[in-house]
Image (cartoon, rainbow, N blue to C red; front, side, top):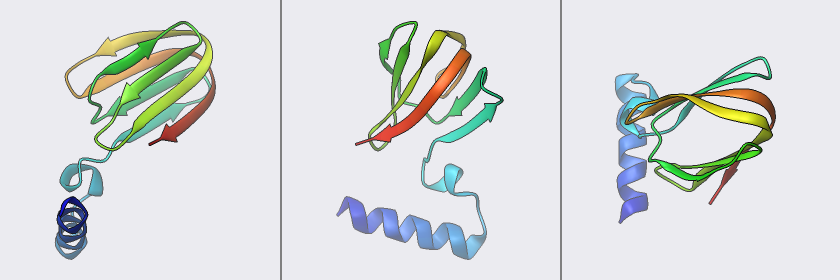
Amino acid sequence: MERRRELLNKAMAEFLELPGDLVLDLPKITVVGRNELYLENHRGIIEYALNRLRINLSRGFLEIEGEELQIKTLMPEEMGISGEIHSIRFLD
């Protein structure tokens, strides 16, 4: 049922030419160099350490690994992270 709803929402977004992150609640990630990351549409923090962050998403979670990672901005659906970023992975 959930998969059917997702397909319908995706078709509507394409038909109406709307951005997927708005209609489908997809995460939007902006990376600036290796030292800044901005994330929209998150669902909270699962794990926070100086070398790893795990962030809950609508589907799965995002894992960010690096050195001296800091959460600079935290709002209900947006966050800003700084530090030396080594990898970004989507996990289910």
